[in-house]
Length: 119
Image (tube, rainbow, N blue to C red; front, side, top):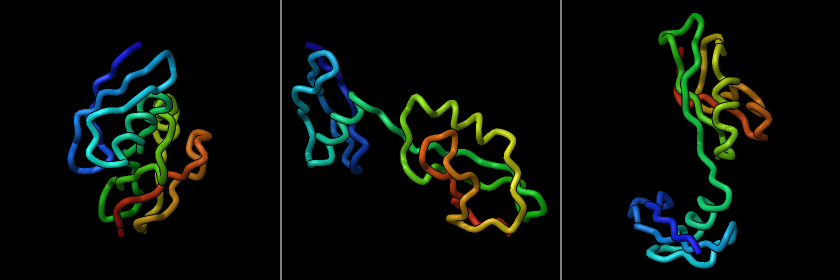
């Protein structure tokens, strides 16, 4: 059995979690103050995911770059593919919060969206 120590990011409390595993199977999660902690501990140890944030160039806008993020979390092992897909993208102003900048980024089944207005 293996124990992993994690800091939960499921809510603002940041609980110190201990996840006990047997191979790839989670046996128990301890230390959480809410239900989200157990779910986070299980997911982080079996299939970790992240929201990817970055910026892309804006042509003809009031700012040179616009902040972007994946609409949903993606598998952690797809992050570098996602960043490679983002590299070199240039969009035309105006850009609005929520605009889809790139559909199905790197085959992740999620879109890259703008998180700022650039006029």
